[in-house]
Image 1 (cartoon, rainbow, N blue to C red):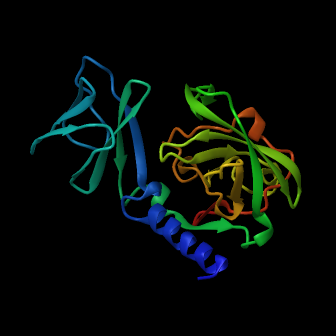
Image 2: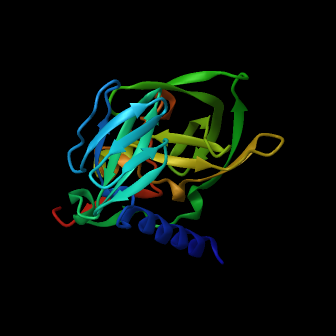
Length: 244
């Protein structure tokens, strides 16, 4: 399979992940629960309480107990437990969410081999962490992996990368194409460097953060070093909707 065909297959998988009945775009609400009380959550029946590191729901039909990441269908909706820095929330996903119903596609730049770039990683000091600010202003920390020096088609730059949960490297990037309709920042998973620090970065697989599809997500924003003055003319650009 050619690189272009692989990219098209990746695009198809992305659309399936986003547009499924309980996919990324179906998030209707994120409800942060208050400890020590029975919380009512709009859109789902019953009351919801925090029990240690779990969420317990008492509904008319059953008692539901969820650890972070676990989920349960209740009627036509899906409830999912979510944790961040010791706080717990209940996420409500629905096939009838307006964020999903209005979704028509994901606009992207055409595939371009010139944006598959070999870079050089300069590793960070061991166990160095950086503060990352989310779209709602919350600050958390991530392990800094280092910076990658790159010669892109629109100019030289560096990419600051952190260690991802999967064990690889990841980055959040804002660039000058936001002035012409690209979403304000995008995500990127980066390959594993070789022993000399050389790493392959395929910007064609730059993708939109979940908060581009629903404002109920609390996405991390770019680190200062990843706010580029150059244009990143590759990858996903923005969401397209029936309402324009």
